[in-house]
Length: 214
Image 1: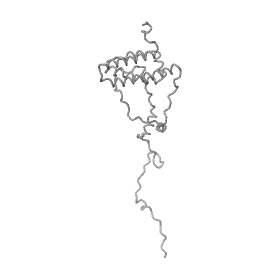
Image 2 (image 1 turned 90 degrees about the vertical axis):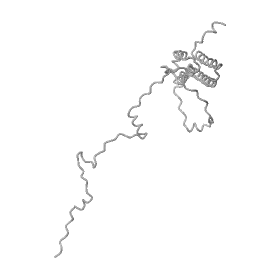
Image 3 (image 1 turned 60 degrees about the vertical axis):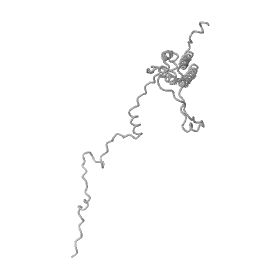
Image 4 (image 1 turned 90 degrees about the horizontal axis):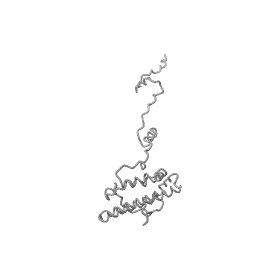
């Protein structure tokens, strides 16, 4: 066997494929003497295969300069319902949360993934496409209990202006701030309004009657 065949791959995606295959081999070795992890191995194997396929396709578009300039707008709900696609009867079982490669299979692969994240080509891909972060963040959480590396963290959301927050609160039925009411009758400030009695009309003078004739 030549020395060239033993040398590790140098490109980003060949290295990533070798990283995925190493995790699959480790899980297969553990399943040989721990048969109860068989269903989990199948779920994680499908997850790792899908992660590799999605990142490889994204990297191919990135290398060819064909990344989309903006995400596609979602279709209207009516169009999605009327698409004619059959609904799935049952959803497949979900993978349990947590760093399963570490807690169940006793394998530490987070350092290998960190080395791939430090690759300049991977950093350029992450900077060019937010989808790369969406692919790699779940993978990191399957490997390590540590927080996400800085290159995978989402940027903080900008704070909404106060005027927009107040308008949004009122549109949702919030209580608007009280406003001063104008003076009654348009009179100036300090004018006193005396209540008029209901019998005030009885106090008005009656007109004089004509004199009686002689």
